[in-house]
Image (tube, rainbow, N blue to C red):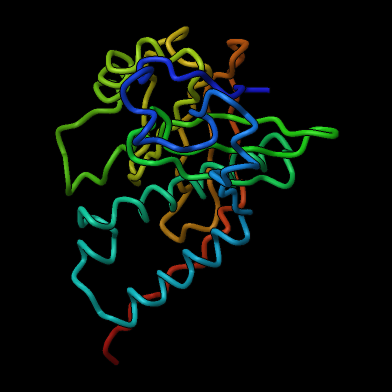
Length: 228
């Protein structure tokens, strides 16, 4: 199991009123009694994202909006990244029945994943990070991003850190801050058609893993029409 529900940690005494997610509540009984848990299956999330994708295409919106780069689209962008990570992570380790719960803005984690394990569930508290397309930040390197995140979350030994490599370029060796996080993962698409994903990283035991050709669950992107 990657991570169990955490206490309030650095938020203790000051942000409980702003964060009501099940992982940040001090009493697990609140899950059922106050209905803070809002887990959804991968199928449900995928269907929601597909509706959003079709709406964006039909509206013929500017590139920034089609790629979910507007500030008000951040929740949808994070849901999309959570969906990709949960799908690839579950497929890589054969965690069937994966479910997603997005956290409120003021949680230290972005998403809580859980999957059946016997009579109960295993889970992971995940902080999502992205290596953005070069057109948005060409000078940023993956090494710089990892080090920046490790400095910010140096206390987060119970968090699973997941970096979405949203670029077509291949990446070289990156120095990973072992011990900072519960787990450290990099994931992204193998090709522009977005049919398969790769997942690589280090688990909580310090064991390195590398997976390729994992199903993405994303519909094939339409091919632009050309004039005859």
